[in-house]
Amino acid sequence: MLVSIVSDCVGDPNGKSRFEAAVVSEIPGGQPVCSYSRDAHEAAGNLVDQLRRTRNNSAIMLGNVAPRANRPILSDQNGSDFCYFWLKNKTWPRDKKVLVLATQDGRTLSLLAKLFGDHDGRLGVNTINLEAAAKQLFPDDELEAYFAANSQYRGVDFMVPATAALWAGKELESKPYVYDVQIEPCAWTVDEFGNVKTTYLWDVTKPLPKSLLVSIVATSSPYGVYDSELPVIPRLCDIQRMQTAVTIGSSGYGQFRFLEIATRLGRAEAALTEGWKIESGTSITFHDLPQ
Image (cartoon, rainbow, N blue to C red; front, side, top):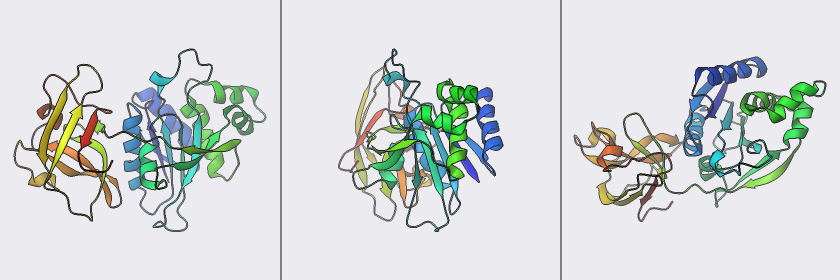
């Protein structure tokens, strides 16, 4: 069974191997697959891509990316709250189960909410009471319970045993919560080929416009602005050599795929900018398209 680990803590061998070892040891049949995500924008997109690979199979999705920059440095809380929910979709087989456990603060769950939430992009989740749940997980071991709640690496010390318990049908102290973080129109990542993956989801059963007016604004220094009309070409292979266009990307779920900006045999991030860069979180607006 796939246990997808989407985290900013698996970019180095130590962090990755510790997470994988915990999953293999504590979740029966768990096969960990790590997807390093530098921030919550990347994590949001990577969770969607990982979910797509489950097809008709049950799976566990772990999203562990903390919005550290937005938390007051003097806060006595040990990182973001964690939440969990059982993801459902009417097109799935009845016996398919998908458990999602993730950091609640920030945009980590925002694209799953966009795809699977209500009409307003909201998800019903359960906010875990960290201290109480840690004691439930380790009722006879005060030291392990303490580390589960207070560890620097809570992804390993709390998330994995909590996931194992929930998957086994156990209850953890929690309360209902409505996750309603809306992700802004932006790039959620730039891949190794320079293709810019945006947060715009397109229903591939519908015809595309011939062109789109695109506005790109850098949200970090060095700042820059790009405004232009780009052709819309559904397949990357039909874009002309060194031409930049909007295309239907390979990322997404079901009939909904993320629109990308790509340059054939080049890097779109370089073709669109002069002295500044496009990265996850860079504001991108396709005018006349719903967000």
